[in-house]
Length: 455
Image (cartoon, rainbow, N blue to C red; front, side, top):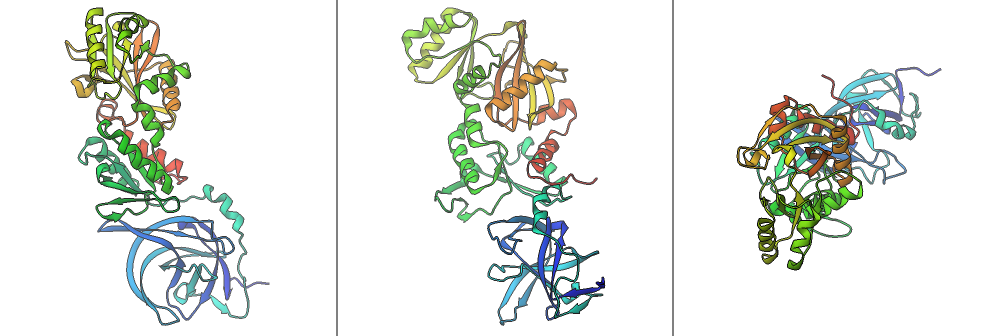
């Protein structure tokens, strides 16, 4: 019969706070502090609350399998190994479970990739146990099969999140940072223009201010229309590294290209205003006739926030605007003007396939554009089941995990006007009194398999 307070020279252990349900560790009474194998060790967070992120290959026979962990940094100390080499190591504290015993212990992080054991248990962690140096596995035997169930573990870790943006003080960015920090994560702004790329097939990198950027668990692209192409290239690079990007580069590009976006909406049978596009000046008359005629709306393909959008109230005015755009070689589309919308539209905020908030935006007197950036006002609104479903389908058709879907109410039913890949938060949060930024962080946590935060 096994005695519960005996351990052998090697034992199965678990580190539940690090999402490591099974490790084979060597007991070493010659070492005071325990040591854990770690690679790609990075420090992040604020000076008074620093975190350490690292990877570990927990399975002895398979270094291809990795788990990434994060923990609060509690100390840094010089440690001299048995071969006389001294190195500076980061120290964390975490729960260690051996058999039925769980205790909080300090652990130093060091690269043990050439060592058989991924963990050394020092004597301070073995207090109360009797060591049997000639025996193995006297405590409960675990199995690496537990890693297949690791997603069901009650596990949280701090995420390192980067927001790609040119506006660090922007309301939306600051709210996302606040929501991330309230959930125990670290979030910072990365100026998109200051990112530059080292494109290699085996080791892609993103550089920033002369240094290689550390690994980010999540990138939230909030890229202005003026730098869409470069922003997409930066997001693609993060995707190549393996970072989860809240919206993919391809979905951003599709939503920003109004012609392609409307073609995709049509492909998925999603209702929208009748839309026409042509390149030749000879086609001006036919472009107008493709829609219901004047009045109609002429939009530059890369317009945003109501800029580059013109209402032509007569056929003559429409022809003049279209001809001017064609002479400037500025690509554009022409759409029906939905007069019965009354200068108002709906903004539905979609996160992970769910509509989490909505508002009605109303144009100012004398303007037809309801964008808040164009001076429009916002109010709370009750949306229909059909409007909710259309918004979800529109976001899905673009491949967007987060989207602001703009819908016009017409006598024929709701019609999608635009799908925005970087929707603002201020108007929709203030109108609805809903923490949309918090819902964005909640979605990120679900996608990365983190357990819910315990209040």
